[in-house]
Image 1 (tube, rainbow, N blue to C red):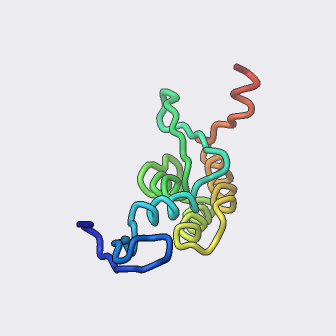
Image 2: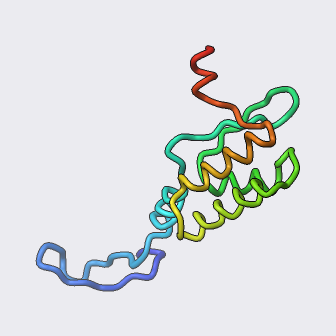
Length: 121
């Protein structure tokens, strides 16, 4: 017996009366997470010792902006927070949130350019 609500469905290729789940929450959660994922992760400095944090989604970025932001909360910070919120609510693509966050992170001096890091390394 399935623990999810189910319905009985008859189809020529299925056994009559076979039980199928109506909704699989893990699929919905995974789809929602993929919608807010960035094409390329963002690297930021999190402390004075040079510790790095990788942000992969608008949700991670929003959490960083709210709870771990080291600089002043400027207009660029506010715009990045709004862009992340727009992505999480399903209205905007994640590239806009990524661009807004990178602008705010550069202003605060916490952005780590991955291209420059790879070229130097």
